[in-house]
Length: 254
Image 1 (tube, rainbow, N blue to C red):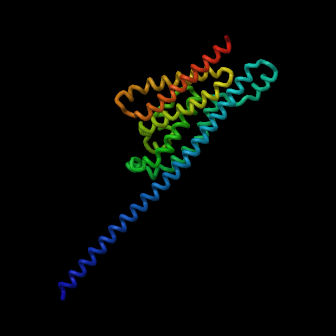
Image 2 (tube, rainbow, N blue to C red; image 1 turned 120 degrees about the vertical axis):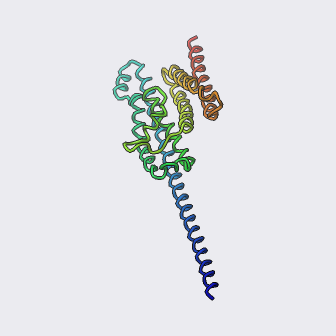
Image 3 (cartoon, one colour; image 1 turned 90 degrees about the vertical axis):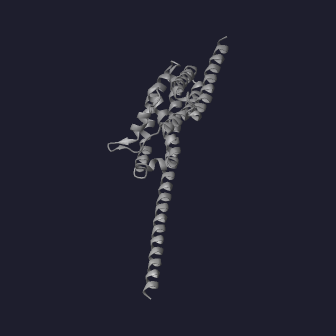
């Protein structure tokens, strides 16, 4: 009788071990799903706030262009307009950068969920918001300094005294800044109807062309082709925009 009892006990112990193992699997999957949902929600909030920052930058840039047009009139009304003019493009960029502090706080809240190798596991959940943030930061940086934000500067904006919240990969950086050309295109379109808009459109076109020329060394081996296509298409549009403005201005003079 002792032998069957021992076998039954061993069977029960084996079953309990299997149940315990699957309970652990279930807890791990639940933790994974909860973490992934938190990151997706945070990424969605980051995307929304970044887009709002981009809209703010466009509005401030348009107000600056309008004030510049009034300033060229040279009468008393223009002097009053200059006295009450909105911030310059550099100040607009600084204001947009300050608004991104709320986005950076959301990224800081992701640090625990993205610690170590977990970042690469959940990169897809964070990527949309990160690229939108890089686009907004790059646009603010361009308005403020007239230059392209570097990957190191993006990483520094997502760091604090304790270190980086998570690594900014080269792919995410390139895809984020390639979207900047769309905002520059809108910026040039808004400026083209103002006094001096033709010069501004040409400056934007030259800036994008310089960025493309600098990036071609990385694209030469077929890497990041998607980002290159985005830059190429919008560069062609910006060139056509500046050329068309120049042609239109020349025809009016004749």
